Length: 371
Image (cartoon, rainbow, N blue to C red):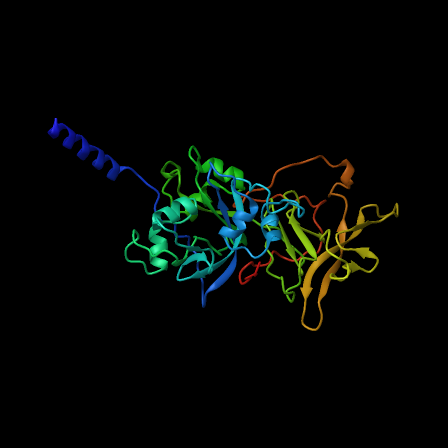
């Protein structure tokens, strides 16, 4: 019986050794002459048996702004910190690209409690977004099972700042749920299987593992922001918005036009924010021509960034726009459509919905916001 038990134990150990398991994620992040910074998104899944509030998420990741957390998850600005956090919840953090790889810059940190091990911190506290090996290496810990109570640890979550297919994106750090497929993830986030496989160095779709940390690129909207504006590198993916210009402006991303849609932030005192207008036209509004001779012509007041060199000012750009498609159809007569085009696939732009004269998509590198 003892011999049988020993044989069974050896068999189980051998099986465990041969079983595939997720390894530490290392996202490619090609800094050129110097380190690059950008904003990345982290997809965090709270513990299933606990009621995690938005305030808990903000504390865990040391977010300086509750509004930024709401914006990353497209939640109304009136949502309180005591509200339950969605699962998963998106967290926007600064990413530092150096030495060919990216990691979240300075945050989050974690203070060791009694009974903690690095593996428990990595898997239990941060939901498998990082491994104990990553935490040990980042903090020069020689024995992952022996960390001092009260010790402050930097938790380097993987991220990236690289463009994809020559276009700027926001990279999402994503933990694969059980039962997922590469095709399903690509469909959900508007990418292609080829891009997901290539970014994550997967040989084929069958090699995907539950619990694996993936780099998922999210397409961002193009904008008319001036190259001289402070927020010239603003990147907004679909299903989120960003507050900019000292929170005076809210910019969202339309998945139909893929143009940045910016409006004055509701609830901010007018005494704090300067009026954003293009002549008599307020920011975000469109003036449609009433002349029968030119029924398709109009003008739009677009957000062009903000400056603070001499005084705080919100820039706008009055731009001509076409309200009809190439066949002369008005917006009301045009057929409805849905869904966003995918990264890596040719995009058929709806010219009736695009604003003529917008700037080329701006590169997203170099922005290190503080919220």
